[in-house]
Image (cartoon, rainbow, N blue to C red; front, side, top):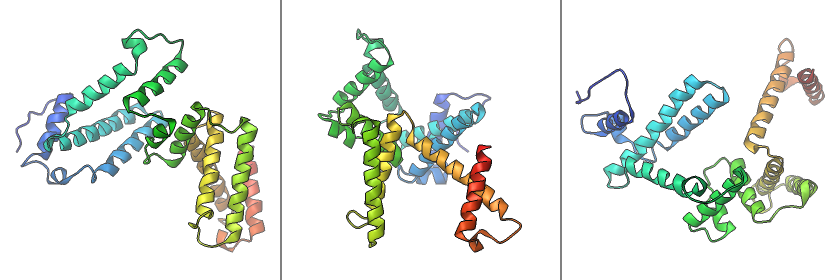
Length: 270
């Protein structure tokens, strides 16, 4: 048994000690086997579960899930500390330094008129801090592991701040129509989907422009797509329920399915 005093209420220092004990000789065999790469997915899952708790407005679940996210942060820090890399103190120091540096209107003598100025200053300071000499450098720094719609939104936002935008909402919509026409051509031409100017490339262009239009109207493209998924799921359930006492979906004609879909759509709006 490890040398640890159990108690009613624990603090952050206890979390650090527990995680180090789990990794130490005589600790947990599973924890001792883990690497940054092996628990990468765990980090993502815990983060998504915390976001889900936020979406469900469940503070009890959020408290628990934030603890799981914090545990992942500590886990990765300890993995680095064991190999002579950074420590948890380095992580905390780094984020404190960053917050002070990027809030000169709070910790310095910079004056701002509102949150717009704060965001503008934040971007300038971030680029200076990371040595980004151009907007293209800032785009390249956007994490490729982000959900693709979020990544496209962030890239487009940086382009817009640099002055590169399609003129007006109508210009962006016309560009979307152009990309949709090219996707149609690629689909009709056939051939491998991943060929140059094939369906894969053209579908990506359509999604990229749809994300840009959402960004212009202040719409989160990920949330918009989640909403579309929820809407489709609800309508599909109505169609499937309507077929429960008769022929299954696979035996229905296209016209029948379209009629059932229209009914589900009408029911949703009533």
